[in-house]
Amino acid sequence: SQKIEQNSEALNIQEGKTATLTCNYTNYSPAYLQWYRQDPGRGPVFLLLIRENEKEKRKERLKVTFDTTLKQSLFHITASQPADSATYLCALEDNAGNMLTFGGGTRLMVKP
Amino acid sequence: DAGVTQSPTHLIKTRGQHVTLRCSPISGHKSVSWYQQVLGQGPQFIFQYYEKEERGRGNFPDRFSARQFPNYSSELNVNALLLGDSALYLCASSSSSLDEQFFGPGTRLTVL
Image 1 (cartoon, rainbow over the protein chains, first blue to last red):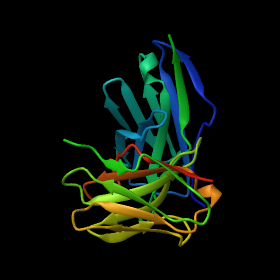
Image 2: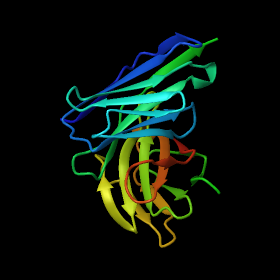
Image 3: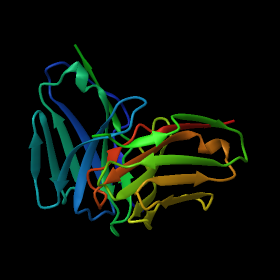
């Protein structure tokens, strides 16, 4: 069966450090992978989309990698700030392209 | 520009009742998707509608139904409510496909 796995344990890091979050998947052949941020009680906010033929994508302090051989995406936040504290979700379309599946999310806590 | 709007914000129902949730997409977006999010988990895909037609359906019972209107707004209906239907219901719009979803604030449904 198709699975998307994110570390369910919260990630605690010190302000200024780089946060790295992992998204692993099985039985998908995704054309692209998406990352979203979600704050408590709010809807997710789209951050980045990376396509299967892209190894890396950057947006300001964010960097995403996509390894279709390892079936893994890494999400990095450099120079992290307390305002980056949130839950980060990865998402994939199913192979038929008509359903979006989210991972369980990883909660990031950046301490000042 | 207004973002995705959802109504109502909160709703309390009892088991066996039915509920209708409403969503207005971003102007110009023709695709609306519905998700259920239980506390501590990622959003689960329920439906996608595009140009008033169902394009995708997640693994939810037939008690869940939806429709999209000519102005691209959408309704999600849930019949015969169960305690387990208590969740945050999210609506997301996009221009056509499932990439870069814009989420609304959600409707918090509590079933007693």
